[in-house]
Amino acid sequence: MRVRQHVNPLKSDLLEIAEVPRIAARPSDAIEVELGSAEAHFLIDRARDDRSTQFVGVEIRHELVDATNVECARLGLDNVHCVFANMSVDMPRLFSSGSVRRFFLNFPDPWFKSRQHKRRVIGPGLVSEIGRALAPGGELFVQTDIFALALDAMAALEADAASFCNIREPWTFLRESPFGAKSRRERQCDLEGARVWRLLYRRVSR
Ligand SMILES: C[S@@+](CC[C@H](N)C(=O)[O-])C[C@H]1O[C@@H](n2cnc3c(N)ncnc32)[C@H](O)[C@@H]1O
Image (tube, rainbow, N blue to C red; front, side, top):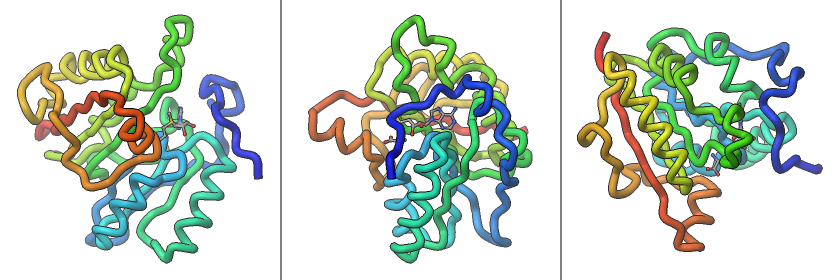
């Protein structure tokens, strides 16, 4: 099956995906979500270590969602699944308020050219939706190898001090990932020796 390398999330059919599911955890399970999960390598790593958490990938390439769900079933991981949705518009349909323990945005944007700024996913709108969906004390982890994107994400989070608090200090990156899981792009950066910028923010209690 051919999987497209990129899609434009602002294309009209991707702004109006018909069947976006409501994500609800099994009773007593927590939910962790990767936004832009691709093949969900990061979630699969985490799911192997923690069978009592439900891991959900949100991905805009439909064919990749189907292939990843088949692969998770083949691996016998019933605590990971991916959904076809556009994180830029579908957060209210996907998540009820305070329902998610942790969001991950791993290498979110290939759109780093200035003329493609409007396609960037992390901005005040997404930050506000993540803040709404996070449980009190919940976390948002962002990592990217593009410094300008890391700085933009940090600026958006620092600007929302009523909702988010930097785990270290304001305007400070993490030294390393606290998660024993790696996404495909993260492994590629390791191979290339590329520097990765990481941020971790906690949801301030309402
Ligand atoms: C650069 S890739 C990174 C994939 C993976 N997180 C990793 O670290 O290897 C970004 C992913 O986000 C997806 N994506 C981009 N915009 C999206 C959107 N608005 N909603 C959901 N997924 C999106 C892309 O299709 C792609 O799979």
